[in-house]
Length: 245
Image (cartoon, rainbow, N blue to C red):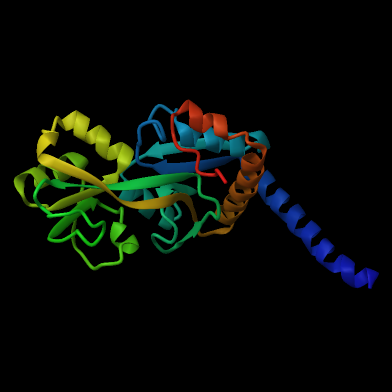
């Protein structure tokens, strides 16, 4: 019985040794991401860059990143030309390895002209042409089939909404509110409602290196969340801490 009881322990030790050895061979991790203010700023500041450095740099892995449009970032990781894509939803696309731990929650808003619907009834109110940023794939998380259009920029999406070419435009809260302020839209003519709340994950390249980096991320996230070490970072960037019980 002693021998039988020790077998799982032996395999666990071998797995830990293998993970540690693999990590020791990795000196950097390359992220690709759209630039989201306060989250993935192009100057290297923001919630994500701080969290990712806290996860990887204490074990000798340098954090590197490149800013690019969302759809291109996801394709870059699918093609294994980067280690991880930032800001994805669970099982959003294929050909990658998803982290088990999320690190953020997205509130997805719908903006539309007043009078478009008689009374807001959540997702059931969406009809006509619904638009969002290319690659965001909100249709995967909505129950009803939609006629949707993908746009390259928030500016073009809001212009299409203003011109009546879109009936609704969907976007994450922070990005939409920032775009509205920048574009100076007359908000007296529009209504904004919450449509979804989604956990946000990392998607890693589907190879041995990506598997090791994903395992490190999940292990370190569990440790840092339990210790409470990450909470001050969310408070610093005035972002919701998504791990409250």
